[in-house]
Length: 98
Image 1 (spheres, helix red, strand yellow):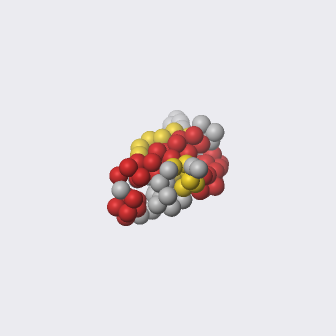
Image 2 (image 1 turned 30 degrees about the horizontal axis):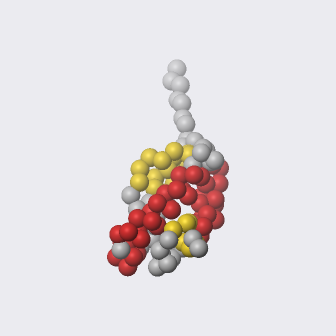
Image 3 (image 1 turned 90 degrees about the horizontal axis):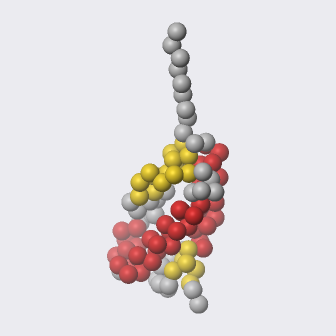
């Protein structure tokens, strides 16, 4: 008798669109602020949705045990993006600390 065990997991990929172009426009210091804000938001959501970071480049590869958690994370991530905190006024998508 063969027992087949299957565990379905969900992978989620994020991407910062045109990050190279944005980095060229902003410069290294401002782009470092954008990345720090992005990563903070993305990572803060992981425990809420039971996800794990697998890899990071200009986006993230994330693993979730259930598809519903991956979808919940994606929706929360999308809603949180405009709330990045950074200081560069040239960085689109950031709320400016006053």
